[in-house]
Amino acid sequence: MSELILHHFDPSPFAEKIRLIFGLKKLEWRSVDIPMIMPKPLLTALTGGYRKTPVLQVGADVYCDTSLIALELNKRFPKPDLFTDGNQGLALALSYWSNTVFFNPGAGLSMGTNADLPEPILKDRSEFFNFMDFGLLQEEIPHLFTQLLPHIDLVEKQLSDGRAFLMGSSAGWADINAYFVIWMLRANVAPIQEMLTNCHSMDAWEKRMQDIGHGKRSELDAGNALRIAKASCPSDTEGVDSADPLGLNEGDKIIVEPDDYGKVPVSSELIGLNRQTVSIRRNSAETGDLNIHFPRAGFRITRC
Image 1 (cartoon, helix red, strand yellow):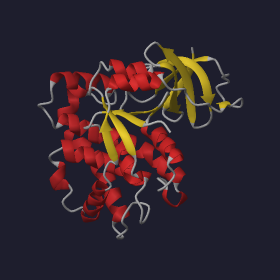
Image 2 (cartoon, one colour; image 1 turned 180 degrees about the vertical axis):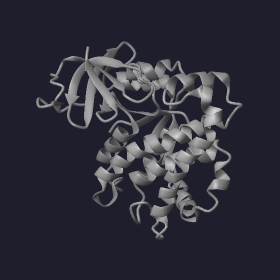
Image 3 (cartoon, helix red, strand yellow; image 1 turned 60 degrees about the vertical axis):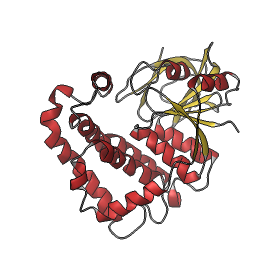
């Protein structure tokens, strides 16, 4: 089996999700450090332009978006199951809760309560996070706290019966989705420390999540990651669902882009499409043939 290569940067909260999966499953993986801000030439050579963090590379297959990466890792390494007690549907649905109504105010506070952020980061994030008005961030801070704290309270309530993890006795994808926002807040939003002092159930749970670790990590140069892609063959796909409402066929030229923020379109040849995923085939001098995989939920697909 090809090595697991994660393209990420250490402060990324979304990358922390995948690092925790590596820890939970005790996996070995290679770490490619990518820039925090654009341009990211070696990453976009791999993804065709997709810029969000993280990206998982396995040989000549590239997986975008944390929910899809989680599904792929769970398929390749089924034990322990990320979706505890058969709760895959519920745990995946919670991804959309944590990635939006929980994450968005946390991201706004991470930007708005750190006035000394370097100008290049502020400029990049103001273009990237189109759900924020950076000109109003300072006056929005009280409102952002009011939008954040009810979701923290939901996590505390779920744990208040003494359970070790959100779905019971074992950690899983639901825990990772709730934890990554709190991990980001602890690192970036100083006032949150005092606000969480009475969250006793959540505090013990956070320590259990930290104890999961990140598996066995080793570093890899981005150029070597591209060479690994070029020396590999992309996997076979299951073809295109003929009943899909978009009416697309294998080989059609399509555009795939996020429908929330970071809307950088990736265009190429359609090779796989079902209710959950869309896959395209790209070729470049740096990488050779690549399969790039995206989830359907949260992404827009249009015909070129």
